[in-house]
Image (cartoon, rainbow, N blue to C red):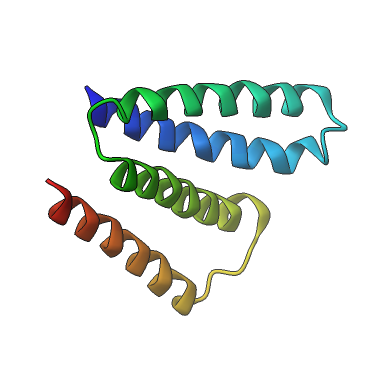
Length: 105
């Protein structure tokens, strides 16, 4: 169950990262409300995951999922750069997360 909480927290982190972009400095009500609600939800789920999972692994997976998800969706939604080198570094980040998982338990 802890892994489910951790994965959900990472996915919700992507929601709040994107909603921050749409909130335009908290000047737009609904995107701001989504940001605040999703930040609270992702932190709650992260803390629930940390009851059983190591803190280093949990936080790395949480941040890594957010970084990968926000970068990919930034490319898709906002036309951000999609260079091969950028995808290489995203793959490197993913490999790091897999490595942390393999050495944590």
